[in-house]
Image 1 (tube, one colour):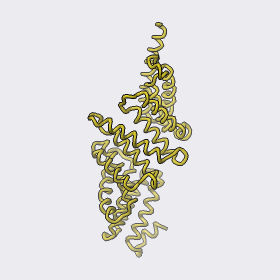
Image 2: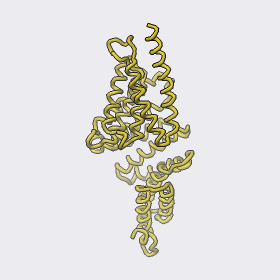
Image 3: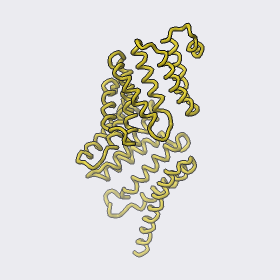
Image 4: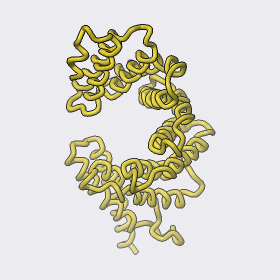
Length: 319
């Protein structure tokens, strides 16, 4: 139906453009192969070529939709991401003049994501991504848009954590990241938003575990509690790779926790054993799912842990 209307030369050009957008969005929502995403990009370009120049808002909306398809295209390098950035930067001035607050905020959120990825390649400043997220938060309030608010807080937190730790403001940024995760967890819950809840708890655990602190044991205990919350959702059966990530993170944390908080000098042999069990399961899952890089990292941790446990065993024999 939509195909026929899009190809009907008697239909108004704007209507034909909208039909092409509908087809593109269908491909984009359920892509079976990367080709579906590149086809969606091509359909958006066709829609733009049909769209009358005076239909400014429609052109901006199509351009922003094209950006979402471009940022989803899997690739080596940054070419599609650079195009997506250009699409959002072209669409946003018009959306700001003529569009609704929610579509503006959505475009800002997507621009932030693109900029954050590009910052990882040294092709954008992470502060630009943070600014885009903060602009999106003017509309995506916690009460009316809990899911968007939570995603933005998660993205802000990961952006803060990705900034260089060489300056004196690193501790402030790490504290801000923890605050962002905690703010997001105030608006999502285990029952209604299990996937987002687990992601946020896992990421909160990482932020607590790796943030420099004058209370490292307290932070590690809070991190363990966060990982345990994530594991209420993530299981080997329903989300094996996410589960493996979380148990590996928990193992890292246990490695640095004393067995008895009141007697840290007594060591952490039991926690090291628990960590080894988690690492072994994570290694098995990563290997099974072809995640060679992660499997290698866990194997290195296991080798180091075995050495440490051997050392403890030798010390015990000497006594």
